[in-house]
Length: 443
Image 1 (tube, rainbow, N blue to C red):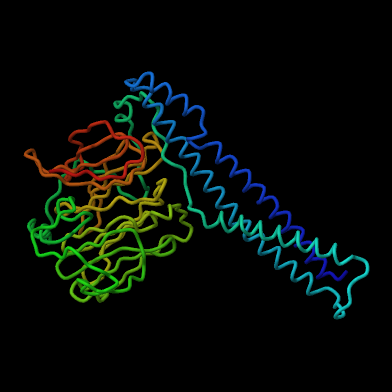
Image 2: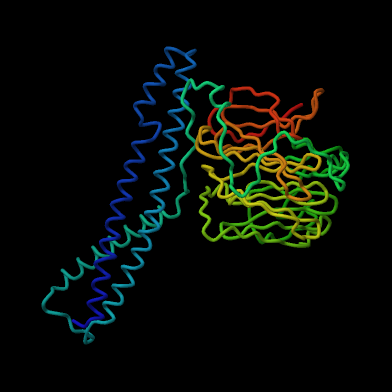
């Protein structure tokens, strides 16, 4: 047998064994996934039965919540393993088919209409049928697994009964060595170019608009519209980079963020015509590995504007500021953000500050979460207050009170209020559970 044909045969064997092992791995992962579900967990069933007998047992409730978080975390981890194995199986099957075609192409040429007497045609037909069937099954496993929704390790709930004082006393490390030392007690002054306070009410500067309530001021708004018929549609425009963030509006400008793993960006559109005025791209480091869920993506955080600059942050940990002409004012790198589903907290502006609720890590004890206040004009960090919470997907709100403005945040298990100018804690209340995504509202 020629050397090239022996090589092709060796590749067939290698890719065949590789695909068979991965197919077995997929089946095993699938069976393990069935065992870790809530509905099949005997531990979960026992805890629920105990809760029926002792409905006021708070410690038991905490145990059930922690168990629920652990089971769902195991489930999502199994899904990640399943998807990775499926993609590898798909690659193995492609290699197997390519090697088989190469092997056949290097073989002796057959004479037309001459059947080999050594192997009966019925046997050859059976072998071909089995081979085709197995290939179809393996390809189906690979395609179904590879196109399934990706899941990742969920945040682990802190152990039941943990004292709040213990978590509060814990002082975590900095989120990035590139950030300067914290100056959380440093007061701030309004920037010379800060927009008047009333201007924020007349625009839509951040997630859920002025006051973070999702309420627009009085006006003559259409109550019906149709993208199909064009009823009450002023314009349509193509968006070059998709994302889950919401648009923000200031004057005659609309700003939007978007992007994928390799490239993020900020876009500016004319409010009257929908014409794109500029687009600026942000490229994360090539070796930056950040896992996000498909439903979250890399641009889930809504940008914010102070009327002078537009600020955007991405799940890769990159943050950038641009003036209204599209010129970069500054950028920052918080390193890869460790978030089970992908970072999604939106930015908020207060006077001269742009504030980041940077919650990350699987548990509060990881010490990776911070509230960070950044000077909008220079990008200088003015404070970085440690937060004893795990990753969350909630965005902060600034709430006016008789005692002054308060920045209120939500993350398991705390609602915490801060002085937005200094980052110092004002008060906290325990009561949140699970994966916290809703943002605080007031009224």
